[in-house]
Image (spheres, rainbow, N blue to C red):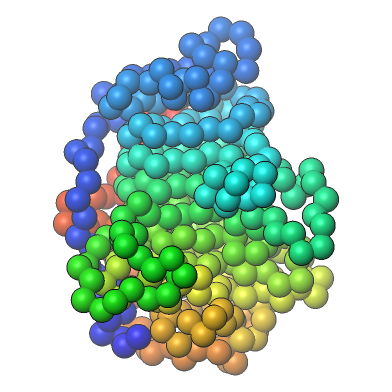
Length: 355
């Protein structure tokens, strides 16, 4: 991909979404495992929330349930002192659920989703023995929401921990994952903003075709022979999607695993790491091939630092980052869209609700 196309991806954002609802106008619902609360399960609270959305204030505890959210503007707020105090947990895998897309402990397919100060986990890998040749795709959070924000959220899993995906751009695509015919109309991937989050996994543990910004997040590798941090799935040039990691950290034990920044799940996979503190030793090649798609992918890494950088031998070449492009590498610069969405302001309002 040319530098010119890359700049277009950074600066363009056309989107059509439902009107936003002010958070302070949403109904507040309390959830607790027991005792005095409106509901004792999160799914029950979601099911009884108004059609326009609600703020779910969740008391400390472990909620062992599979959760599906199909209403817009659902805000999940953990009321503990730290994200570890509120845990949303389930243990489906692609095999047990009938597909990776059905395995999520929490699945969200409505816009305006928000989560604050809690943990979402898929414990399949910890609770099941894998047999030879058996995959272990087991999603903690599957999110296809536009204008979604996650703040101080822990996402725990192994293979396919976070499915940061879109509902758009998928019509009439080839079933084999190959590139669609040229001349597609431009489309906007779902916009998602992760701030101060902790994401743990090993194989393709952040994947999908959202347009997602990760700021000040920790990406933690669980032990596996080969750890792939990302598998982004932008499928054609006119699709405005990609993963952008700003001021994040990559951590994990150096026990001989090969750790790479990503591999291309689809033909035009797009990932950028900027100002990354790489604590765990990274493989010198940095990225990995997948089905010959690396040549069309847009992979970038700028200003990495830390003891694990292991740089200078990446398998893809990066053009210089221009001043205009660097200036655009902000959550709002990447995600604002034609509706001028302010993801940083959305985080601020979410934190006020959590007080």
